[in-house]
Image 1 (cartoon, rainbow, N blue to C red):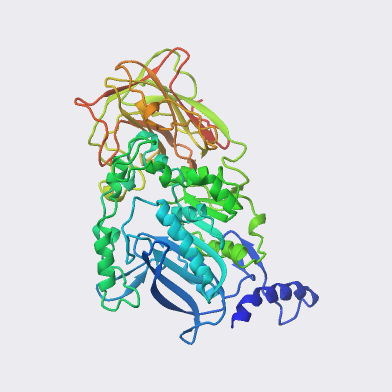
Image 2 (image 1 turned 120 degrees about the vertical axis):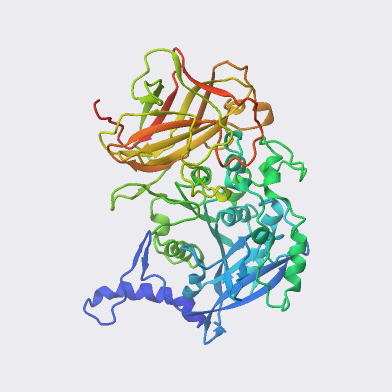
Length: 605
C-alpha cells in the first residue's frame, strides 16, 4: 500500500498525458483541475479509514507534551508505508471528552479541518502546547520562545517516526496560526510548509493597536478551556491521573490579560516575566529567520477580523514562497470557500511534490464583501493592488446632530465636531457578547459622526483608509476610535472598517518593517507625549484594510468615539472625562482618505 500511495500521483499524471491518444477510450484518466477551491485529477483519495494513537512525547527540557496522531488505515489497522505529516500546535485542548463520553478532536468540526488529509495519504497530528490541555509544564507568557523550541522538537520527532517520510507541514488558525510562524523561526530541517490563518505578526500592534488595549485577547482566562479541564487523556493515562497532574501545573502559567496590561508600551519589560515580551512573542521580530528557513507559507485571513492588517503586513515583509488569501468573513471563518481543498493543494505541492500549479498562481487572492455574485474574488501580485484611486473627504460641521463628510474643503477654519467621552459605551445590538468580541460594534450613543450625501453609484472601498485629524482635548491624554460605517437607505448600519490611536501615541516614527506607506506609531515609552489641554495636535492613523462594495444610495459615515466596549480595563481615564474637539485649521483640514477602485460620486453632485 505504501508504494501505491507514493507513486499513484505520478502514474495518474502519465495517464492524463496519454489520454489524448484515444479520446474515446473507456480508460481515459480524469480531467486535471487545480485552481482556488477546485482540485481533481492530481491527488486520489486512497483511504477511507484512520486510526488514532495518543501519547506523550518528551521534548529537550524533559517536559512531556500530549500528542494525538491520526494515520491512514485499512481494515482497522494503520496502513504500511511512510507519509508526509501535517500537525497543529494548540493551547485549546487537542481533544476533549463530552459529558456523554464522546471524544471530540480539535481537528474536526470546522471548514479548516485537517483530518480529511488522512484520506489522501497524510499523517495528521495535534499537540497540546506545554501548560495547556494534557501537556505538562506551565505556560510562560503567550507564544514564547519555549513554545517555538517545542515546535522544533516536535517537528523533528515527527520526521523521525517510521510512518513519516520526513516532509512536515504545520497548520492552524489564530493562536494555532501564529504558532506555525514561531515554528518557522527555529528552522527545523524537515519543516517544508506552513499554513497560518488569522494570526498575529506584530503582537503589540495586534493587541494594543495605537497604544490602546481594546481587543479580545484581553479577556480573563476561561478555566475549562485555558487550563485543560475536560481534556482527553492520552492512551497510557487510563485513569486520567496524568492529565490531572498536568492540569495542576497549568495554574502556575502566566495570566494573559494581566500580561498585556503590564506592558502598555512596546518596549516595556513585563513585570511578570522580566523580559521585553512584546518583542519575544512577535513573529515580526524574527522576520530574517523565517525568510532564511525557506519554508513555503500559505497565509490567510479575513476582512471582518481584528487581525486583517497582520496578514497583509506579513505578506509584505516575507519573501518566502508565499500566497495571501483574504476572505470576507470573521475570525478563522471561511464562508462557502472550500478551505480543506486549498490546504490539500498547498500541502500536495510542497510536501508531496505534486506539480499542481500552485506556485504559478497570483500571489494574492481576495474577496470583496458586497460584490455581485461572480465578481467577489479578485487576484493581484501585490497588496495593496494596483489601480487604486484615493479620494480625500473633509470633515465639516453640519446643521444637525451629525457633521458633514464632503468631497470639497469645508471653506473655513473652525470646530467640525465635538463630544465628551462616554467611558461606558454600549453596542446598539444588545445580542453582542462582549466576552469574545473579535470586532467592534455599532455604538448606541457614539461621540460624533460625519456623513456623506447618498452615493450616486456603488463604491468599491479597496485598501487602507486613513484619517488625518486635528484634535484638541480637555485632558492631558485620551483615546480616539474611528469607525467607517455604511448607512443603507433603510437606516441599517454596518461597520466597514475601523482604527484607533491614543493621543499621547500620535507621533510617527520610521518603521523597521515595510509598512506600505502607512503611518507608523511605534509605541515605545519615549515616543509618548501628553498634550497641553486645549492645544490642537495632528492625529494621523489608518483603518484596517478592506475590500467592500457599498451600494448606491447608501451614505458613508465616519464615527469618532473616546471609548469602545472591547476595553475591559483602561490604562488612562479622567474625571470628568475629556471633551474631544475635531478642528479644521488654515491649511490643516481634518480628512478621511478613502481608497477605492474607481472614485466616489454622490447624488446631487
